[in-house]
Length: 427
Image 1 (cartoon, rainbow, N blue to C red):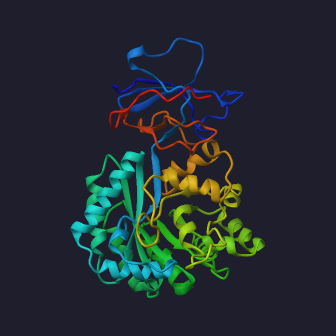
Image 2 (cartoon, one colour):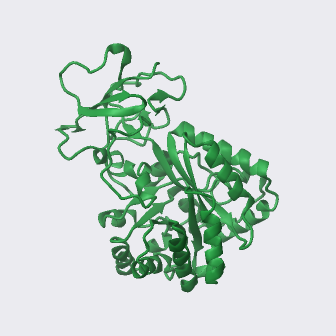
Image 3 (cartoon, rainbow, N blue to C red):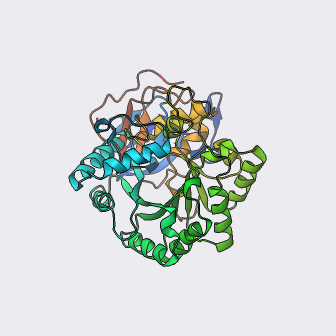
């Protein structure tokens, strides 16, 4: 199939449509998208009028769900695909960290590049246009090998996947403010795709060190991305402290907080008060359903009792941006995964009992503006690159079921040969 100049009968999610978009008995009216020079030049409701393009350039997707290019907002490309070479890994977060530290001693540039490059290929095929990877950074005075490798991969993949990297630094290394400033300066020197990050957990809790993260980030113009409260300890206070520090310092960047599992273990009044404090601030939450379902409340020979998800529905009710991401893939933290964020959302739909996944929650896979300090605005396809994902066998009611067969367009051009017709007429 040649690159289409017009896509008709596309089922777009409600969050991507203007308020005046007409509705039908089955949901929003289907859309016609016009494409030119690799961009989307028009988006109109389907009518009885003649199509805007000749049949040779007109692709009727027959009601198939269509999303803009996907965002995988929290991954670990340095660790990925290491599980096959490891022995038995004990359950739980801290045990996984120990296993990873042992394996890390044998990493080489070629090893990290091969594994991370393979993962980027998977993400590309799934329809990702933007990824963010955390990189372990456990020493104060040296830059990790994997950090340099990912910086190279970011340049190599430019124009295909926008790859950002976050320094995953243990919180105690920020205890000394001068050292915090040196770490931030080293991260900032990597380029605009670099973000300052830290691992914030009750096992290393230090409120002053967390404050230093934000002081150093502000001085170097960096955004902040934290692993926060990745545990079911109700006494964990990382997210609440983050909100307090951002408010008190007037931090001007974007803050991303991944995991925040402890909210689900805290008394409801306390957890909701924390979300109320987060709501007016430039903070985005990221939930990682697959990894946290496997890693939290894990013990040998026992069925887990707790789900390990943050309070995604309560956060959304307060207007807090929430993204869903893959996290770890086939490493000691998570033995499954494929760098398809739709797969992660499918797990979240079940675990968090999310309603209307396509119309209400698919934005959690697409909103890259929720990651950086750019002003948040109403999303729009018109004028954007024609990077689209068409789910050929799914419908909007059952999605993300039957979402594996898809057509990925990059600047309006299909990635690979495919059957251009959906399996059946979509409602």
